[in-house]
Amino acid sequence: MVNWPTSRRPRPEAPRLRPRVAPTELSRIDFTEFTPEPVAFLGQAAYVQLEIFENLARAVSTAPELGAKEGLSATAGVALRRHHELIAELRRLGAEPAKVMAPFAPALDRFRQATSGADWYELLLGIHITSGMLDDYFVRLAEGLPHELRGRIRAILGGPRSSEVIEQELVRAVEADHTLDDRLALWGRSLVGDTLLIARSAIRSGSGGHAADVEPVFTELIAEHTRRMDALGLTA
Amino acid sequence: MVNWPTSRRPRPEAPRLRPRVAPTELSRIDFTEFTPEPVAFLGQAAYVQLEIFENLARAVSTAPELGAKEGLSATAGVALRRHHELIAELRRLGAEPAKVMAPFAPALDRFRQATSGADWYELLLGIHITSGMLDDYFVRLAEGLPHELRGRIRAILGGPRSSEVIEQELVRAVEADHTLDDRLALWGRSLVGDTLLIARSAIRSGSGGHAADVEPVFTELIAEHTRRMDALGLTA
Image (cartoon, rainbow over all chains, first blue to last red; front, side, top):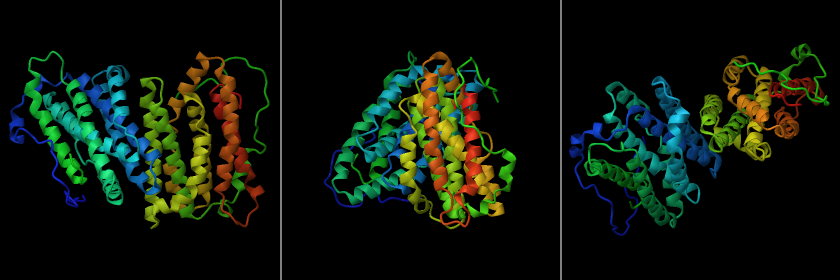
């Protein structure tokens, strides 16, 4: 694990998205109110991994240098394995994966296109930010699932992030081209809204709880996003 | 394993590419004359698997139906695993994979573009035909490698073909659209020349043997190609 400096050169102070609650408050949220039933949860989580895979495969194809392909394709392999493991969970519940995923496809296809950026670096940042937020989110949301399934979801979506290669490429690019950090900072900020919309759409509809009750989870996602941007030397 | 009918409806006789030697003659070829040294062999074989992966990932992204994505993405995972296993063999020999693969990239990138077709079905047939021929070929060519390495290459590139999903999609498409078989037959025939050129370029340059001596291998590749097209109900 490489520890990136949180900031590599002085930059003017800029407004940042800050967590509005301390992380400890999160443990009080009862996810059973918000987590969809297992089949819907798995269908959406599986399709999210497929979208991440597709964007990573595109990053492999369009990589400007051969050296980046190896690490990116390994990361693509992780997303692909997660997708297939979630699919296997769906089959275990007797569900037909393609049918279960279909309702999520239009919104997630649009999301993928909206977050794939104008060039290779924006594509990489899009993958890094959206997969970082959504992997975290689905692991949190899984807390409302039956105990055994929750453990397996954590095993599938948790584990090593394998995004080091993306971090390395982005840090190297920002260092080499000093016009890139402003553009990427802006792009990173614009990704948050779209990603939170996807996260919100994953909350069980017609749940007894109020949307405001789950707000601390989004606050935590934003705080993690800020840490992720900091690690790249970008203003969140 | 599904056994496809070799021909599902009568069609006019057409000239076919036929093997000119019996397969038994092949065992007489001494591959040590033609097989490149291990590092070059592995570099080219690894890059071929990366190209197959990239085309498969594109087939996943552009699949007209969600149902096809699962099988195709699993097949993409096989190509990706092969790529990484060949990369691991390169590292085992102390070689830097990106450096070793670089000389093969321009020709293989052009090859991938030339064989990726005008639509999703041509893309699928391109993957099926070129990966079928080249996987066979590299396994044969590996006969000239040192004994232990040869066994590992066979383990990596041999094994289940995992192209059933592609066969199924193509057979279904040809049955649903009776204008497709002529177009795909023509496309399949045009893939052979490009693929044989890649195969020829993999022969060790300046080898003591004559190119004509390795001709039976190409004849065998063409015979396998004919069987593959037959299995799809297409004229080779």
